[in-house]
Image 1 (cartoon, each protein chain N blue to C red):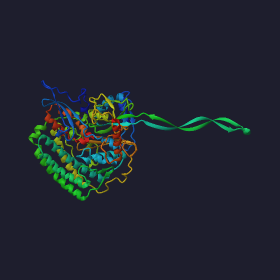
Image 2 (image 1 turned 135 degrees about the horizontal axis):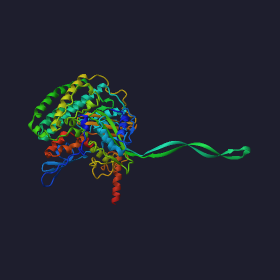
Image 3 (image 1 turned 180 degrees about the horizontal axis):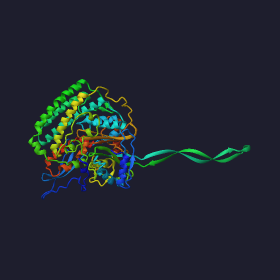
Image 4 (image 1 turned 120 degrees about the horizontal axis):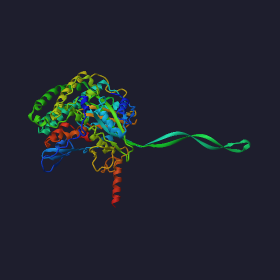
Length: 390
Length: 226
């Protein structure tokens, strides 16, 4: 997007959802989709007003899973929140760990050894692949392809979770990263096993695409549905595959140069139309790029320490100040904002949840579409309620 | 990216009387911030978004911070006149006024406030972050701040969350309701002086402190019933 485009004068309220007038006569039907609707991936509610089948108003309702993660984290030491970050987006615990560790490292000015950076990249890209595969599986499940695509995705996810389990001791709640490094080192056997799994992934993506990409039903239901314009996407703080599907080239791995992503060759897939199909396609292409990054990282990983020698695990008290650290999590920009007052606990601990903020434009995307499309549009956003409600 | 001082100068050239102050961040992250006057915040925000050299078109993060009233004790040296009895000539006593320097501790209370923090980035120019802050007058009755949702839609749900958990009222927000807590909820849980309800865990649990509170709660309730 060019600078000139962002500058163009716009009418007031251009970034608000448009008013949709009901056609014909008769009353509107109010439907509460959720909190127990099977498509809501947990407990989430959409209060929808329907004119026949057409959506004329949609209000998301949050908070069913709220446990005030931030308040809890302000009452305990910095490291004690690390296992709790696993529970934010429970599909991607390792990237949550990384985002939190990155923010604390910025706050305390810690360095991370090269081997630990490689381990982080490997784990983050494995997480991205299993997250995108599951998301597409769930999307197809909601489209009526009961079971098959989801089971194909979960078969592959299972192999990746086995790797996580053998390394960290847990399949989903990994609690693996530390401020200034990682908790345990990789064995050469683990690297060999990972190489084997990664070698099998391109065949899986090919198989997935052969089933789905040219599928007539998928194209009919997804193309031109739930369109999000790039200028609104940027203004509404949308991030991750959803932003890039709208054609905005903004991948934090390229923009922020965090970790060691500068060392790897990879491309940033972009969409043209910003519809559900583009979001599907961007995720498939991102899986392929992640496989490329994994091959490079597994090839180049150096030997060496996995923890910063100066890192303090006990009695960790960063100097007063604040820091905001963010990474490209599979669902979008995951950020942590920390204020230290010099004590053992953070004075302020804030999670910037991509799942919640990506729902800002849910109403804009759904207005005027049929109620059956709401399920798909919502599924294409890719959220986890543990992160939305915190 | 320009430094915060340069951005401050650019803002003051574009929005006269904006009253921007630089807040330095001593941590190694060196993410310094700008404190805005609430009265001019919307104009400053629109300028930051639309200026071609700054182009902060992406609002990443909005959050609140609670700063409690701070009691500051200062040691001040004060000169006081003290009357002393001094031995005079030939065994008499004389009274004399002497200046004496005494150290006194004086306490004054710095009023607390609620603060909203905004993290801006530029997608077009790929720079950032720029941190903006605004403070309310106090923590009790003057808690209004202007909403930046008209400039960046990204603030919509996040400002609702700050309203819900901190109690900052964002004027000009299109849909300011509670978001994570239920509508009937009264307090603001993220404030530092928030007191948890004592019937949090009504069932007796293995934790002694919780068990004790639950018993106290139950006996109080039974007492009021009798």
